[in-house]
Image 1 (cartoon, rainbow, N blue to C red):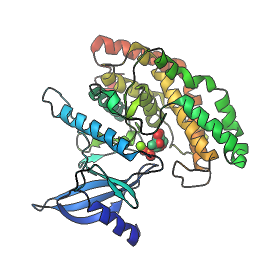
Image 2 (tube, rainbow, N blue to C red):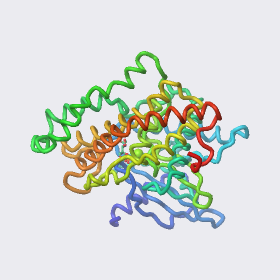
Image 3 (cartoon, helix red, strand yellow):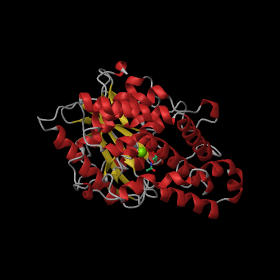
Amino acid sequence: MNVQAEAAARAVVSEFAIDGELLALERFERGHIHDTFISRFQMGGGTEQRFLHQRVNHRVFRDVPALMNNIECITSHLASHYGDPEVDSHMHALELVPTRSGRSFVEDASGPWRTYVFIEGTRSLDRCESPEQAFLAARAFGQFQADLAGLDVSKLRMTIPNFFSSPYRMRQLDEAVAKGDQDRVAGAQAELAFVGARRDMVDVIEAAMRIGRFPRRVVHGDTKLNNVLFCDRAGHALCVVDLDTCMPGYSLYDFGDLVRFTAAQSKEDETDLHQVGTDFELYKALVDGYLASASSFLTEDEIRLMPFAARLVTFTIGLRFLADHLNGDVYFKVGREGHNLDRARVQFAMVASMEQQSDAMESYVRACSKRSLATGNGRLAASDS
Ligand code: GN1
Ligand code: MG
Protein backbone atom coordinates (compact mmCIF):
# COMPACT_ATOMS: atom_id res chain seq x y z
CA MET A 1 0.00 0.00 0.00
CA ASN A 2 1.45 3.43 -0.79
CA VAL A 3 2.01 5.91 2.02
CA GLN A 4 -0.90 8.16 1.06
CA ALA A 5 -3.39 5.30 0.75
CA GLU A 6 -2.22 3.90 4.06
CA ALA A 7 -2.60 7.25 5.83
CA ALA A 8 -6.12 7.62 4.42
CA ALA A 9 -7.06 4.08 5.47
CA ARG A 10 -5.65 4.68 8.97
CA ALA A 11 -7.74 7.83 9.33
CA VAL A 12 -10.91 5.96 8.39
CA VAL A 13 -10.14 3.05 10.68
CA SER A 14 -9.86 5.46 13.62
CA GLU A 15 -13.53 6.38 13.11
CA PHE A 16 -14.71 2.94 14.23
CA ALA A 17 -15.44 2.31 17.90
CA ILE A 18 -12.35 0.25 18.64
CA ASP A 19 -10.87 0.90 22.03
CA GLY A 20 -7.21 0.30 21.32
CA GLU A 21 -4.08 1.42 19.54
CA LEU A 22 -3.58 0.59 15.88
CA LEU A 23 -0.40 -1.47 15.47
CA ALA A 24 -0.59 -2.49 11.81
CA LEU A 25 -2.77 -2.20 8.75
CA GLU A 26 -2.39 -4.34 5.65
CA ARG A 27 -4.21 -4.85 2.41
CA PHE A 28 -5.95 -8.22 2.04
CA GLU A 29 -6.40 -9.32 -1.58
CA ARG A 30 -9.80 -10.94 -1.79
CA GLY A 31 -12.79 -10.82 -4.12
CA HIS A 32 -13.60 -8.98 -7.31
CA ILE A 33 -15.49 -6.06 -5.82
CA HIS A 34 -14.28 -4.31 -2.64
CA ASP A 35 -10.92 -3.20 -1.20
CA THR A 36 -10.18 -5.10 1.98
CA PHE A 37 -7.70 -4.39 4.78
CA ILE A 38 -6.79 -6.13 8.02
CA SER A 39 -5.74 -4.22 11.10
CA ARG A 40 -4.12 -5.31 14.34
CA PHE A 41 -4.87 -3.37 17.50
CA GLN A 42 -3.41 -3.38 20.97
CA MET A 43 -6.53 -3.38 23.10
CA GLY A 44 -6.96 -2.08 26.65
CA GLY A 45 -5.69 -4.84 28.94
CA GLY A 46 -2.78 -5.63 26.65
CA THR A 47 -4.40 -8.16 24.33
CA GLU A 48 -4.17 -7.86 20.56
CA GLN A 49 -7.18 -8.04 18.30
CA ARG A 50 -7.61 -7.98 14.54
CA PHE A 51 -10.34 -6.35 12.48
CA LEU A 52 -11.33 -6.49 8.85
CA HIS A 53 -12.09 -3.22 7.09
CA GLN A 54 -13.66 -2.82 3.70
CA ARG A 55 -14.05 0.08 1.39
CA VAL A 56 -17.33 -0.82 -0.25
CA ASN A 57 -17.46 -0.60 -4.02
CA HIS A 58 -19.97 2.16 -4.41
CA ARG A 59 -20.34 1.66 -8.15
CA VAL A 60 -21.62 -1.87 -7.57
CA PHE A 61 -23.52 -1.19 -4.34
CA ARG A 62 -25.21 2.13 -5.03
CA ASP A 63 -27.48 1.96 -2.02
CA VAL A 64 -25.04 1.46 0.84
CA PRO A 65 -27.61 2.15 3.62
CA ALA A 66 -29.76 -0.67 2.16
CA LEU A 67 -26.73 -2.96 1.94
CA MET A 68 -25.79 -2.28 5.55
CA ASN A 69 -29.41 -2.65 6.65
CA ASN A 70 -29.38 -6.18 5.23
CA ILE A 71 -26.09 -7.03 6.90
CA GLU A 72 -27.28 -5.68 10.25
CA CYS A 73 -30.54 -7.66 9.99
CA ILE A 74 -28.69 -10.86 9.18
CA THR A 75 -25.86 -10.60 11.67
CA SER A 76 -28.21 -9.69 14.52
CA HIS A 77 -30.68 -12.45 13.62
CA LEU A 78 -27.85 -15.01 13.51
CA ALA A 79 -26.25 -13.75 16.73
CA SER A 80 -29.50 -14.17 18.65
CA HIS A 81 -30.19 -17.51 16.94
CA TYR A 82 -26.74 -18.90 17.81
CA GLY A 83 -27.05 -17.45 21.31
CA ASP A 84 -30.19 -19.52 21.87
CA PRO A 85 -29.34 -22.50 24.09
CA GLU A 86 -31.89 -24.59 22.15
CA VAL A 87 -29.82 -24.24 18.99
CA ASP A 88 -27.04 -26.75 18.65
CA SER A 89 -24.57 -25.08 16.31
CA HIS A 90 -20.84 -24.60 15.98
CA MET A 91 -21.47 -21.61 13.78
CA HIS A 92 -20.54 -18.01 14.59
CA ALA A 93 -22.21 -14.87 13.29
CA LEU A 94 -20.14 -12.14 11.72
CA GLU A 95 -19.94 -9.09 13.98
CA LEU A 96 -20.01 -5.53 12.68
CA VAL A 97 -18.07 -2.88 14.58
CA PRO A 98 -20.10 0.36 14.75
CA THR A 99 -18.62 3.78 14.12
CA ARG A 100 -17.97 6.10 17.05
CA SER A 101 -21.31 7.73 16.30
CA GLY A 102 -23.12 4.38 16.33
CA ARG A 103 -23.58 3.89 12.59
CA SER A 104 -22.79 0.76 10.64
CA PHE A 105 -20.46 2.47 8.15
CA VAL A 106 -18.33 5.57 7.63
CA GLU A 107 -18.91 7.83 4.66
CA ASP A 108 -15.40 8.90 3.75
CA ALA A 109 -14.24 10.93 0.75
CA SER A 110 -12.66 7.68 -0.53
CA GLY A 111 -15.98 5.83 -0.28
CA PRO A 112 -18.08 4.01 2.30
CA TRP A 113 -16.18 1.89 4.83
CA ARG A 114 -17.28 -0.78 7.28
CA THR A 115 -15.53 -2.94 9.85
CA TYR A 116 -15.97 -6.50 11.10
CA VAL A 117 -14.33 -8.28 14.00
CA PHE A 118 -11.73 -10.61 12.46
CA ILE A 119 -12.51 -14.22 13.29
CA GLU A 120 -9.33 -15.84 14.56
CA GLY A 121 -8.40 -19.50 14.38
CA THR A 122 -9.93 -20.08 10.97
CA ARG A 123 -8.80 -20.67 7.44
CA SER A 124 -10.52 -20.33 4.11
CA LEU A 125 -9.92 -22.42 1.02
CA ASP A 126 -9.72 -21.22 -2.55
CA ARG A 127 -9.76 -24.74 -3.93
CA CYS A 128 -11.58 -27.74 -2.55
CA GLU A 129 -9.17 -30.35 -1.23
CA SER A 130 -11.63 -33.18 -0.59
CA PRO A 131 -15.29 -34.22 -0.83
CA GLU A 132 -15.44 -33.87 2.95
CA GLN A 133 -14.68 -30.14 2.66
CA ALA A 134 -17.27 -29.74 -0.08
CA PHE A 135 -19.78 -31.48 2.14
CA LEU A 136 -18.99 -29.25 5.12
CA ALA A 137 -19.18 -26.06 3.05
CA ALA A 138 -22.49 -27.03 1.47
CA ARG A 139 -23.93 -28.01 4.83
CA ALA A 140 -22.80 -24.67 6.27
CA PHE A 141 -24.49 -22.68 3.50
CA GLY A 142 -27.65 -24.79 3.82
CA GLN A 143 -27.50 -24.23 7.57
CA PHE A 144 -27.07 -20.50 7.02
CA GLN A 145 -30.28 -20.48 4.98
CA ALA A 146 -32.06 -22.67 7.53
CA ASP A 147 -30.94 -20.39 10.39
CA LEU A 148 -32.36 -17.43 8.50
CA ALA A 149 -35.64 -19.14 7.65
CA GLY A 150 -37.20 -17.37 10.65
CA LEU A 151 -36.15 -13.91 9.41
CA ASP A 152 -38.91 -12.02 7.61
CA VAL A 153 -37.53 -11.81 4.08
CA SER A 154 -39.35 -8.52 3.46
CA LYS A 155 -36.95 -6.84 5.94
CA LEU A 156 -34.19 -7.32 3.38
CA ARG A 157 -33.84 -4.93 0.50
CA MET A 158 -32.77 -5.72 -3.07
CA THR A 159 -29.46 -3.89 -2.89
CA ILE A 160 -28.60 -4.71 -6.49
CA PRO A 161 -31.82 -4.77 -8.52
CA ASN A 162 -32.52 -8.10 -10.26
CA PHE A 163 -29.25 -9.49 -8.96
CA PHE A 164 -30.33 -13.16 -9.13
CA SER A 165 -32.55 -12.83 -12.18
CA SER A 166 -31.27 -14.88 -15.11
CA PRO A 167 -33.71 -13.30 -17.63
CA TYR A 168 -32.41 -9.90 -16.55
CA ARG A 169 -28.79 -11.04 -16.99
CA MET A 170 -29.71 -12.23 -20.48
CA ARG A 171 -31.17 -8.80 -21.28
CA GLN A 172 -27.98 -7.17 -19.97
CA LEU A 173 -25.93 -9.34 -22.29
CA ASP A 174 -28.19 -8.50 -25.25
CA GLU A 175 -27.70 -4.84 -24.47
CA ALA A 176 -23.92 -5.29 -24.25
CA VAL A 177 -23.95 -6.97 -27.67
CA ALA A 178 -25.88 -4.03 -29.11
CA LYS A 179 -24.02 -1.19 -27.41
CA GLY A 180 -20.68 -2.62 -26.28
CA ASP A 181 -17.26 -2.78 -27.90
CA GLN A 182 -17.96 -4.19 -31.37
CA ASP A 183 -14.45 -5.66 -31.77
CA ARG A 184 -15.03 -7.63 -28.62
CA VAL A 185 -18.48 -8.68 -29.85
CA ALA A 186 -16.86 -9.96 -33.05
CA GLY A 187 -14.30 -11.88 -30.99
CA ALA A 188 -16.94 -13.56 -28.83
CA GLN A 189 -19.10 -15.17 -31.53
CA ALA A 190 -18.56 -18.72 -30.30
CA GLU A 191 -19.61 -17.79 -26.76
CA LEU A 192 -22.62 -15.85 -28.04
CA ALA A 193 -23.69 -18.86 -30.11
CA PHE A 194 -23.40 -21.07 -27.00
CA VAL A 195 -25.63 -18.63 -25.14
CA GLY A 196 -28.10 -18.34 -28.03
CA ALA A 197 -28.69 -22.08 -27.99
CA ARG A 198 -29.65 -21.96 -24.30
CA ARG A 199 -31.93 -18.94 -24.03
CA ASP A 200 -34.85 -21.11 -22.93
CA MET A 201 -33.12 -22.00 -19.70
CA VAL A 202 -33.17 -18.57 -18.19
CA ASP A 203 -36.83 -18.23 -17.20
CA VAL A 204 -37.41 -21.70 -15.69
CA ILE A 205 -36.93 -20.79 -12.02
CA GLU A 206 -38.67 -17.43 -12.20
CA ALA A 207 -41.61 -19.05 -14.01
CA ALA A 208 -41.90 -21.63 -11.20
CA MET A 209 -41.89 -18.83 -8.63
CA ARG A 210 -44.49 -16.82 -10.54
CA ILE A 211 -46.93 -19.70 -10.21
CA GLY A 212 -46.07 -20.12 -6.53
CA ARG A 213 -44.17 -23.41 -6.65
CA PHE A 214 -41.81 -22.10 -3.97
CA PRO A 215 -41.36 -18.85 -2.07
CA ARG A 216 -38.71 -16.19 -2.00
CA ARG A 217 -36.28 -16.80 0.80
CA VAL A 218 -33.06 -15.32 2.16
CA VAL A 219 -30.23 -16.11 -0.24
CA HIS A 220 -26.53 -15.71 0.56
CA GLY A 221 -25.75 -15.00 -3.07
CA ASP A 222 -22.03 -15.79 -3.22
CA THR A 223 -21.47 -19.29 -1.90
CA LYS A 224 -17.87 -19.60 -2.97
CA LEU A 225 -15.90 -22.08 -0.92
CA ASN A 226 -13.74 -19.26 0.41
CA ASN A 227 -16.79 -17.59 1.92
CA VAL A 228 -16.88 -20.28 4.60
CA LEU A 229 -14.34 -20.05 7.38
CA PHE A 230 -13.20 -23.43 8.68
CA CYS A 231 -11.87 -23.98 12.18
CA ASP A 232 -8.14 -24.44 11.66
CA ARG A 233 -7.87 -27.02 14.45
CA ALA A 234 -10.99 -29.17 14.14
CA GLY A 235 -11.73 -28.45 10.48
CA HIS A 236 -15.46 -27.86 10.84
CA ALA A 237 -17.22 -24.91 9.20
CA LEU A 238 -17.35 -22.03 11.65
CA CYS A 239 -18.71 -18.97 9.91
CA VAL A 240 -20.31 -17.91 6.66
CA VAL A 241 -18.87 -14.59 5.48
CA ASP A 242 -19.38 -12.05 2.68
CA LEU A 243 -22.96 -11.06 3.34
CA ASP A 244 -23.08 -8.42 0.60
CA THR A 245 -25.42 -10.25 -1.67
CA CYS A 246 -27.78 -11.54 1.05
CA MET A 247 -31.07 -10.61 -0.47
CA PRO A 248 -34.49 -12.08 -1.13
CA GLY A 249 -34.22 -14.62 -3.93
CA TYR A 250 -34.51 -18.32 -4.74
CA SER A 251 -32.70 -20.65 -2.34
CA LEU A 252 -31.36 -22.79 -5.12
CA TYR A 253 -29.20 -19.93 -6.27
CA ASP A 254 -26.94 -20.78 -3.35
CA PHE A 255 -26.80 -24.45 -4.23
CA GLY A 256 -26.13 -23.62 -7.88
CA ASP A 257 -23.32 -21.23 -7.00
CA LEU A 258 -21.81 -23.86 -4.69
CA VAL A 259 -21.56 -26.31 -7.56
CA ARG A 260 -20.32 -23.61 -9.93
CA PHE A 261 -17.41 -22.75 -7.72
CA THR A 262 -16.62 -25.66 -5.43
CA ALA A 263 -17.11 -28.55 -7.86
CA ALA A 264 -15.09 -26.72 -10.52
CA GLN A 265 -12.10 -28.70 -11.72
CA SER A 266 -10.23 -25.52 -12.58
CA LYS A 267 -9.77 -21.95 -11.48
CA GLU A 268 -12.52 -19.51 -12.41
CA ASP A 269 -10.23 -17.88 -14.97
CA GLU A 270 -8.39 -20.93 -16.34
CA THR A 271 -7.28 -20.43 -19.94
CA ASP A 272 -6.71 -24.11 -20.74
CA LEU A 273 -10.28 -25.22 -21.29
CA HIS A 274 -9.24 -28.89 -21.23
CA GLN A 275 -8.86 -28.53 -17.51
CA VAL A 276 -12.33 -27.13 -17.00
CA GLY A 277 -15.27 -29.22 -15.87
CA THR A 278 -17.49 -30.19 -12.97
CA ASP A 279 -16.22 -32.89 -10.65
CA PHE A 280 -18.95 -35.44 -10.02
CA GLU A 281 -17.57 -36.64 -6.66
CA LEU A 282 -17.52 -33.07 -5.38
CA TYR A 283 -20.97 -32.48 -6.81
CA LYS A 284 -22.28 -35.48 -4.84
CA ALA A 285 -20.70 -34.19 -1.65
CA LEU A 286 -22.31 -30.79 -2.24
CA VAL A 287 -25.74 -32.36 -2.74
CA ASP A 288 -25.30 -34.40 0.44
CA GLY A 289 -24.11 -31.43 2.46
CA TYR A 290 -26.72 -29.01 1.24
CA LEU A 291 -29.57 -31.45 1.77
CA ALA A 292 -28.25 -32.39 5.22
CA SER A 293 -29.25 -28.92 6.40
CA ALA A 294 -31.55 -27.40 3.78
CA SER A 295 -33.93 -30.32 3.37
CA SER A 296 -35.52 -29.02 6.58
CA PHE A 297 -37.17 -26.24 4.57
CA LEU A 298 -36.86 -26.99 0.83
CA THR A 299 -39.96 -28.03 -1.10
CA GLU A 300 -39.99 -31.07 -3.39
CA ASP A 301 -39.93 -28.77 -6.42
CA GLU A 302 -36.82 -27.04 -5.16
CA ILE A 303 -35.04 -30.33 -4.52
CA ARG A 304 -35.94 -31.58 -7.99
CA LEU A 305 -34.52 -28.40 -9.54
CA MET A 306 -31.14 -28.57 -7.75
CA PRO A 307 -29.15 -29.98 -10.70
CA PHE A 308 -30.82 -27.51 -13.05
CA ALA A 309 -29.98 -24.64 -10.70
CA ALA A 310 -26.31 -25.65 -10.83
CA ARG A 311 -26.36 -25.27 -14.62
CA LEU A 312 -28.44 -22.12 -14.54
CA VAL A 313 -26.33 -20.22 -12.00
CA THR A 314 -23.11 -21.19 -13.79
CA PHE A 315 -24.62 -20.08 -17.10
CA THR A 316 -25.85 -16.83 -15.55
CA ILE A 317 -22.47 -15.92 -14.07
CA GLY A 318 -21.06 -16.66 -17.52
CA LEU A 319 -23.57 -14.18 -19.00
CA ARG A 320 -22.40 -11.57 -16.50
CA PHE A 321 -18.69 -12.08 -17.24
CA LEU A 322 -19.33 -12.00 -20.97
CA ALA A 323 -21.48 -8.85 -20.77
CA ASP A 324 -18.79 -7.14 -18.70
CA HIS A 325 -16.16 -8.12 -21.25
CA LEU A 326 -18.25 -6.61 -24.06
CA ASN A 327 -18.89 -3.49 -21.96
CA GLY A 328 -15.15 -2.93 -21.46
CA ASP A 329 -14.63 -4.51 -18.01
CA VAL A 330 -16.53 -1.97 -15.97
CA TYR A 331 -17.83 -4.29 -13.21
CA PHE A 332 -15.48 -7.14 -12.27
CA LYS A 333 -11.88 -6.29 -11.49
CA VAL A 334 -9.58 -7.62 -14.19
CA GLY A 335 -5.90 -8.49 -14.11
CA ARG A 336 -5.25 -9.01 -17.81
CA GLU A 337 -6.62 -8.39 -21.30
CA GLY A 338 -9.62 -10.63 -21.97
CA HIS A 339 -9.86 -11.70 -18.33
CA ASN A 340 -13.66 -11.57 -18.22
CA LEU A 341 -13.90 -13.44 -21.51
CA ASP A 342 -11.67 -16.17 -20.04
CA ARG A 343 -13.94 -16.33 -17.01
CA ALA A 344 -17.06 -16.55 -19.20
CA ARG A 345 -15.49 -19.38 -21.23
CA VAL A 346 -14.83 -21.34 -18.05
CA GLN A 347 -18.44 -20.93 -16.94
CA PHE A 348 -19.78 -22.08 -20.29
CA ALA A 349 -17.42 -25.07 -20.41
CA MET A 350 -18.72 -26.04 -16.99
CA VAL A 351 -22.30 -25.74 -18.22
CA ALA A 352 -21.40 -28.07 -21.10
CA SER A 353 -19.81 -30.50 -18.65
CA MET A 354 -22.92 -30.46 -16.46
CA GLU A 355 -25.15 -31.02 -19.49
CA GLN A 356 -23.18 -34.18 -20.25
CA GLN A 357 -23.57 -35.38 -16.69
CA SER A 358 -27.14 -34.25 -16.25
CA ASP A 359 -28.78 -37.70 -15.95
CA ALA A 360 -26.32 -38.80 -13.29
CA MET A 361 -26.66 -35.47 -11.49
CA GLU A 362 -30.43 -35.75 -11.42
CA SER A 363 -30.54 -39.34 -10.27
CA TYR A 364 -28.09 -38.57 -7.49
CA VAL A 365 -30.34 -35.81 -6.14
CA ARG A 366 -33.35 -38.15 -6.28
CA ALA A 367 -31.48 -40.87 -4.38
CA CYS A 368 -30.09 -38.47 -1.84
CA SER A 369 -33.40 -36.74 -1.18
CA LYS A 370 -35.05 -40.13 -0.53
CA ARG A 371 -32.27 -40.92 1.91
CA SER A 372 -32.71 -37.50 3.58
CA LEU A 373 -36.40 -38.18 4.04
CA ALA A 374 -35.69 -41.65 5.40
CA THR A 375 -32.95 -40.67 7.85
CA GLY A 376 -33.60 -36.99 8.48
CA ASN A 377 -30.03 -36.37 7.38
CA GLY A 378 -28.43 -36.46 3.95
CA ARG A 379 -25.11 -37.89 4.98
CA LEU A 380 -23.50 -38.51 8.32
CA ALA A 381 -19.96 -38.67 7.06
CA ALA A 382 -18.59 -37.83 3.65
CA SER A 383 -17.24 -41.36 3.41
CA ASP A 384 -20.59 -43.14 3.33
CA SER A 385 -21.71 -42.03 -0.13
C1 GN1 B 1 -18.31 -11.34 -7.36
O1 GN1 B 1 -16.16 -10.23 -5.48
P1 GN1 B 1 -16.72 -11.54 -5.18
O2 GN1 B 1 -15.77 -12.63 -5.56
O3 GN1 B 1 -17.18 -11.65 -3.74
C2 GN1 B 1 -19.81 -11.14 -7.57
C3 GN1 B 1 -20.56 -12.44 -7.50
C4 GN1 B 1 -19.98 -13.42 -8.52
C5 GN1 B 1 -18.49 -13.55 -8.29
C6 GN1 B 1 -17.88 -14.39 -9.38
C7 GN1 B 1 -21.53 -8.28 -5.85
O4 GN1 B 1 -18.07 -11.76 -6.05
O5 GN1 B 1 -21.92 -12.24 -7.80
O6 GN1 B 1 -20.59 -14.68 -8.39
O7 GN1 B 1 -17.82 -12.29 -8.28
N1 GN1 B 1 -20.34 -10.22 -6.57
C8 GN1 B 1 -21.08 -9.17 -6.93
O8 GN1 B 1 -16.61 -14.79 -9.00
O9 GN1 B 1 -21.40 -8.93 -8.10
MG1 MG C 1 -18.81 -11.74 -2.81
